[in-house]
Picture 1 (spheres, rainbow, N blue to C red):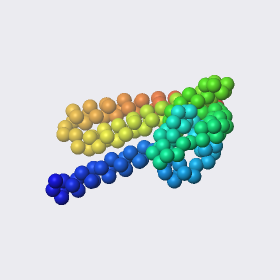
Picture 2: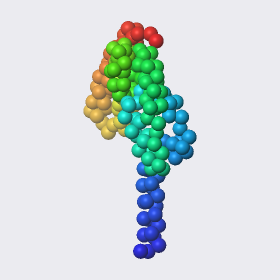
Picture 3: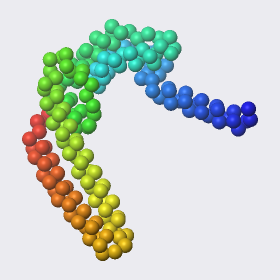
Picture 4: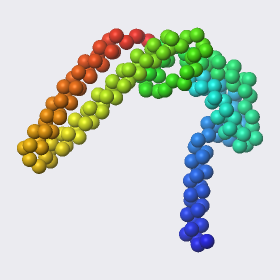
Length: 183
């Protein structure tokens, strides 16, 4: 194998190792020093599913460390209790984060989901408004370099349509925000 080929192979292998290590939930040091109860509480408070423990186990198994599953689950239960509130559901929905269903067995999923769905609806509406704004900017740039009057007319028609759509979406967003629960 030539020196160039060897370097290429080493670079690819190093990149693959780096990519794989980036997938681990915990580093070697974190596995060695983990407070499993605290880690479980953090995972639960962040809305991770119970399967997160298996991900930690996989990360730590590479160095021969087994998580303390009992301590992690006790902490996770506490963390999930703090996660499964309407205020957190609202925050998660507004941020556009997913929901892993961790509140189903906690008896308070209804309140969490009501707030989460309201926040998610507002997040989606804000995204639609931003997408329309981006499209308007794109059309404005095209208008500057339009080759003829017909092309400019077509672009202006599209922009008028998007402006009306933006106005409608902003009105809907305002109504959604007014009727949204307060947390």
